[in-house]
Amino acid sequence: MRLELFDQGLRVQRVGDWLHLPLTSEPSPAHLEEIGKAFPEFEVSVCTFPERPKRPLKLIDALEGRLPPHLLASLPRSIDFVGEIAVVEFPPELEDHKAVVGEALLVVNRRLRTVLAKAGAVKGVRRVREFEVVAGVGGTETVHREHGCTYHLDLAKVYFSPRLSHEHRRVASLVQEGETVVDMFAGVGPFAILIAKNLRKVRVYAVDVNPDALTYLKRNIRANRVLDRVTPIHGDARQVIEERLTGTADRVIMNLPEKAREYVDAACEALKPEGGIIHYYEFTEGPNPLETAKKRLTEAIKGTDRAVRKVLSARTVRETSPYTWQVGVDAEVR
Image (spheres, rainbow, N blue to C red):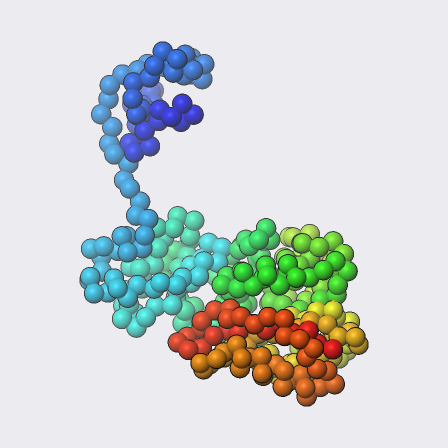
């Protein structure tokens, strides 16, 4: 392979005590000299080699002939890859073909070991959803790697979305040395740990009400060697702030889009007396999601003893359903 003579389109064969390696062309005298240095005993001969079967590169290619043509147009276009697990939202017309699609995904993506189908919405105070194993070895626990960080997690017990990868990095890049950050809904730590990985002189309080999330959070803090910078706290964010984090934060992260508005007053309480920055997320419908989210956050902060000094940015993070978006707003609060 170093001499660029190995034909990767053909299969290597073993015949008796010999290994037959297919070459792309007859080796030159210089090639033979180099090969002789690596293999003291070799011969060049003419053989017939079987072709190496080509692995399909796309899901639609792997399913050609296995699904009716009209169903190929309904294949899921958005698949979440979390570690060695693929999470798929199947449309109703593919309900009876989930196993076939799942097996094809395993063929196309060799690093996968399990394919899960979403079997319900994210719900409850722990923000978990139900899954159905449709292909592979099963199991919902995995190790996910993102931006140089390692996250142990169980998709059936904790909330995690690889679609927020860019948002994790964006927020982490804004934090400055010496800041104190309160991550009110930390999950397994994708915001908190990345911030601590990037900076040496930072303190992050990572809070979550889900005990399973906290178990994995603690494990991830150790795995990423940020024990001296991230403090995991189990409990409801409002109660935790009231009891031990009032007036401590330069920056607060509120990644609970279903209920973040209900906790704006707690986030304001966590900020230092002179103010700070809130990273706020919500689900928004309608024609002007950014303006709607900015208005809601501003109004919610007005209900406290704080006020928005400046809206630093607003963006759609992802579309969750037709005409519904997860929106993020960064606000400087006085």
